[in-house]
Image (cartoon, rainbow, N blue to C red; front, top):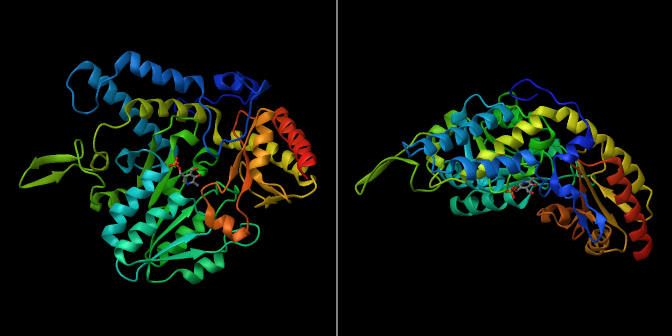
Length: 413
Ligand code: PLP
């Protein structure tokens, strides 16, 4: 439901009309955009919010006393409130603007990690993680002498919860886990993971880059310590994301970067820092994109994530049924509850060839390792072809995709 309580009935035709890019053609064919897990397209409301900001009230935030600065600051902070509501945080003080999920995780690893990790401490990740939830932890682990433990997955990409419990111990300081896998669409049991981690005194970061667009998020109910997501995967602009962290944690965390805005007082003899969240927002932020992010949040809220999810689930189930029947095709992570992603291999065919030939039909999919090389390694493959869905996809999109793929596989096999 939107902030004004209004719910928009779901009509995929009228939704598509809101996304101008969907009117274009690719190679003379209507665009079938199925690369939504990489980034979603933007509705006119988001594009208009960007233009309105630059044409109406562009100014630097927080520091000015003139009218434009006041208006820009109000618009900027209004997004913080919208983001708070979107993830169910208790206070806007717990919402830090970042460049995206990657920067949010780096912030936690560099600030909280450096402070709390000691020689012999353990960080638990899973085989499913995106590189941006692996590399920042490797960097801090190396610096602090901590050790990374990895929860394995089975041949379907299922997170092995019992193995996770075996890895958990008094040495575990943090569990950093992807909520919905970008490579497979499988969902991790984050509620159980968080409860078990807290029982041994460990903190939990949830990588919500994919879940934030498909699932209703309530960080208070989840009781996660950190939650990271990116606006561009939620129909918003690139270059903006949020880090949620519990107020008690942020209050004790050292700044991640130094500069303007994050200070209280600067002397050459020493500097005192601003309160969270501003302590973690050094320098002029990405104001225009933050402002436009609110339009994306309100757009999604007006339709409602359960409604969007139901639409995407129906399309995914139908198209999966058809793709499964293509000779030589293997869908990875093909288990119930998978969200928005169809990742597959075709025996004897390189994913890149499939991607290029699908593009010739106007169908945009992603091929490769999807920034999850350890997961690809687990499956003994270099990569997959991935189709990923959004609210504006239609049964016709699915039909064009499946028909094109059938043709491509016939040609290449
Ligand atoms: N984590 C997951 C699961 C992702 O899918 C992505 C992006 O694809 C990221 C992290 C990184 O997000 P960003 O590139 O927006 O920082």
